[in-house]
Length: 265
Length: 86
Ligand SMILES: Nc1ncnc2c1ncn2[C@@H]1O[C@H](COP(=O)(O)OP(=O)(O)OP(=O)(O)O)[C@@H](O)[C@H]1O
Ligand SMILES: [Mg+2]
Image 1 (tube, protein in one colour):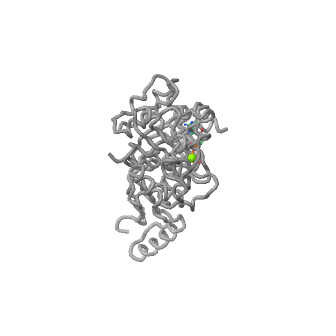
Image 2 (image 1 turned 180 degrees about the horizontal axis):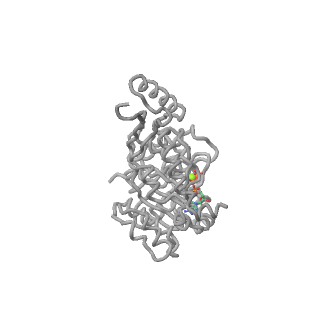
Image 3 (image 1 turned 60 degrees about the vertical axis):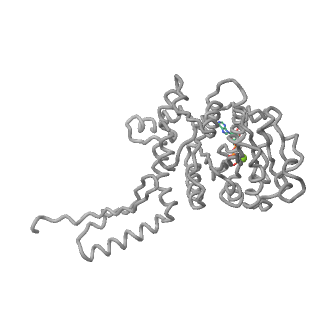
């Protein structure tokens, strides 16, 4: 069966794309799926560090495209899951080294041996974004409940529609329930209404995400039952085709109240 | 001061302000109609309609209304009030 190619993009930078890709990659691998995560942020390699694989890189995406190595040689196998691979970005090149056709070809070559290929798009709407969405079967847009990120996400929704790559689905990251409660932050319904696209997950603000990045151990690996970790797992399950109601996130206290804002799928 | 404004309910919560501002700016972004163009449209609508009907030019509003993927241009044009039978 052919792999499903999933591109994670955002418009605005720093909203949590790489964090999401690392966590989804690991979460899907934990389900027994065969996964390749591709760092398409050429020149600003990050996904390797989030996964703790930065010391294992020999070749990269641009080496593959320019024929310096075979695709298999550039794949870095994860330390924890034998069926999880990283295709790293080149660090000393720029985005002009990759074309949309290159990305399509690379993904086609990976297609038969894997279940999911997840592409971590660079920020922006220029060439990096263009080549990142080219191979996508499905696109996830990450945003924060914040005016600039939502505005940029709307631009991306429009561009994806124009490319007939949609409909994209939305992850709202860094939600602060206590601020929503005070009316000092856009709530989930506001963002969905403004962007008019389907929601696939809500990830709360969580300092453990920084700790996880420090260690190169994505949050989904830890069994501390953080709500952010659970949110990533739920998104991964939805991607794998499972019906996971948003209500399962309901817990007593603050978050219980928060997820009243989330409308069911 | 701000505290009292909020207490009196006169100051909208910033989340609501964010939503309203986004609603407007997204409508402009999606249609690439600038606020300046809206003003021009409004002036021309006033002049066209006034040629035929007496209106209240100060009350005219030309705005966007936004519903999911549908954006409408809405012109609200009050007629000049006059007494019945003059
Ligand atoms: N839910 C969250 N709670 C707290 N911190 C977060 C959360 N999500 C992301 N972060 C932090 O935000 C920062 C940016 O995240 P990340 O690198 O994943 O964003 P990005 O969209 O990939 O950025 P870029 O556009 O530069 O590629 C990181 O320091 C990360 O730890
Ligand atoms: Mg990134």
